[in-house]
Image (cartoon, rainbow, N blue to C red; front, side):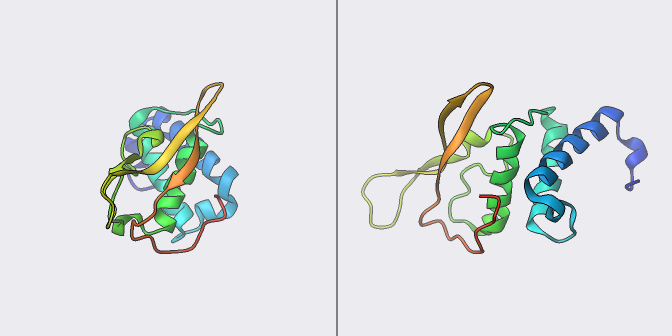
Length: 142
């Protein structure tokens, strides 16, 4: 039992479990191991799922949202030059934006690009994060 767990509804508990199941399916024990970036991504996803009531566990649903959060934590998203809506309430396919890169005259698309339609959703097909002050190691989830 977590602190304040008695104040959480059964539906919220169920949704948090859906998010944990997705994270564990993708990252294994790392998703529940204290201090890992996968646990940080799982914790964020649990809060996000309760807020949004989203329980789409398809490959282009919560799984890709979780992996995108892992990417954010793995590459030091808090220190990025361009936040690009990462970890916002927006659909992860909207975690992008036009940015001006040093030495360029025109803006360029940066963030997650989703241009593959599948039954039940749109999948991330490209990750464009150049010139964004990334730091860290490439997570195996990608």
